[in-house]
Length: 288
Image 1 (cartoon, rainbow, N blue to C red):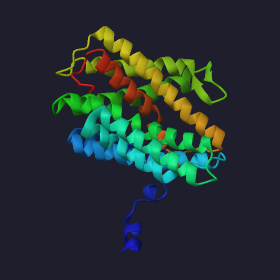
Image 2: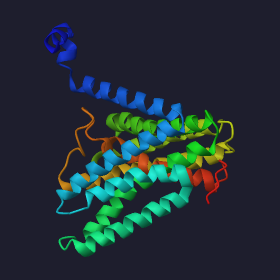
Image 3: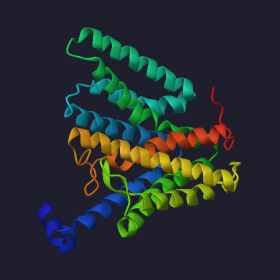
Image 4: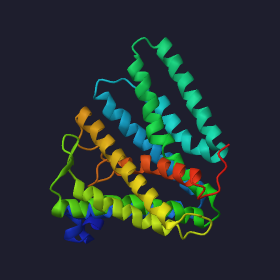
């Protein structure tokens, strides 16, 4: 059956170029993300749990190559539980997961003599970095009724993707001044500014979502801040890879690398967006 299927496959699909592979993988990633976000609270929470677990695994794998000995099991479990805990119990749930993770890591540190304080720190940081930061999307999603909560989250995803796309297109064409040459040599100030424009455009679209009370001026300011956070998240992951000697965080996404490579901008953007929207009074979310 495999042989017959392969014989019927067009030649251009059997020997796909790197660009074709990258496009197909990106299309699948985008379709799954949009479907889960718009399908409802539970599908999105399950998606974020899967993303957090995979990203945590990639993070810890890289750190082991940097002479660290993180507790991968505890870190991955906590990363997966963060989105679920915030969905079920709000910020109190996140605090409980953080406390449980800290206590478990302390017990591990006391009874496993090879563990060092930096290993405990890396284990906690990895879980918070890949799991806790994503919880901003949960806060935004549950603040508004369907379908507007899902649309709000989708617009936030689009702002991140637009930030990356605008920065790449402009930076590759006219980029001359390096943004962070030692961390990410391909990024330029020209691309950075173009990326902020892409982010602002979708934040302006958010101001028209029913249930959101945000002026255009606020949208522009919030879009610029979240865009900066997205770039910072990208640079932070690039620094982690450079220190660990990795080009990509994994191989789960052919043509793109690891899932952490695709989600690095989303981590800081999601938590920053949630804080801006809640503190700014733009969405009706009760903190405690």
